[in-house]
Image (tube, rainbow, N blue to C red; front, side, top):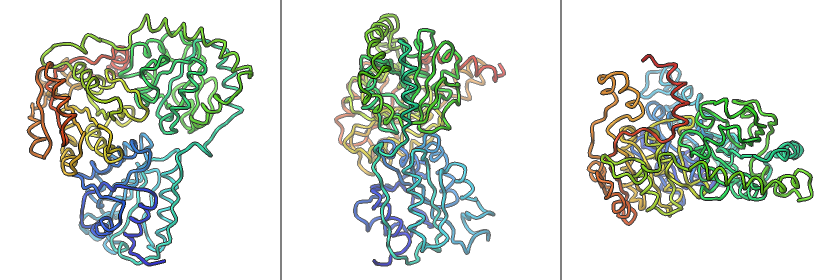
Length: 580
């Protein structure tokens, strides 16, 4: 085995673990990585505008690919810039390896530039709060051990960002390349399954007819959509999803209720909040604020509550379940599908199937899918966001991967978009709520799945955050990469509230009506501006046929969001903390 310098060891081990891209910003403390990245075939650098964008691209890449993402930057300001992006990955347990080139150990605490020591910016301490695991290289000869520890964490079910700090004075040390890849299949083999508890839960479930499944991101992480579909169809159990699992059960399926919670459908929100449901099965969801209708008590009374999650720490967090058990989602659904029809609980559930279908038909008759459906076709000027999203859905292919940022536009995009494929609709509002994520994250996803049409729906406030990353899309000549800016000239949700205080308070939430199409053109993209609803379809079609990345600046009005049930619940809670 040959000796290589430490940075080459790290890059080669990334390649051996099937990494294909490193999202990075160059800087002095990562100079030693550059030649190694360009020398090793099969792994490519994506140079970003900002380290925060690099972290978010790695996050989007990991979500779309089902693998891990990698970002690279310097210590000091490079490290602090990464923090928000990595905190998003931590909140959603997305596997991202963040590598920082740090100040030499010999320079620490001596007022060196971008000092990462205890007297400087304390990079290690900063990352400690948002890392699932963290390692600083102190001995180059232990490179293999450090890398294995990183990947051992990245491949677990309770993953998140992992930080590797590589001091500059160790980067050129020669080490023997003896790395053996530990990459494992993401199948459910070996994952937790508690068959006896699952059987007990099914016995309880079989005692009730009006049963609903509510699935969260744990189903996506387990790659359980096919098993979920088989389970739901076998027993004719209606399925609702949280926002983070939108599309993981196809929304055009006869058993689909759509999203529950913020941006949810009327049939999901009003059914689950009612006393109609006898038994609610929660799978792979923590039931946080967004997914629980602001921790609504209406979800719990008079219902049997069954909760299944691979992470026992997620059980009984918001509601005390009647039965709470630890199991991987995919293995749980597969277990239920493998049980013979003659099993008592299975036979009982199968007997109830017809009654459940009749009940679901009643729900469909009495409750619509969308709120304010008339806005989908409104000829209003400024353009109504519901119209903008509805026409986007009609033009884009079914397998479009959609990224939705955080703001007033979130609710319109998530409510009026219909998602039919697992792991094709992405948002982060449930925990992090960081603005500006969708632009870089969608670019990362495009690198992961280059053949997919990729759309990011963002607000003008989000463009002010990380909008500069559209230059990365232009730099790498990404095709079928479309940024849709729903431009209402405001920080939308704050403005809806602040206008109620005083005109002066409302002005603080205003945004200058920038020419985002012109901005995009200056960076090498194709730009369109739309200020009439009749022009939407033609512009979307032109964007889809374009040979370059495209930004569409849609001049929207500031309209109330369509999710009335959640808004009323949320604002009732929120207003208790507001001084009117």
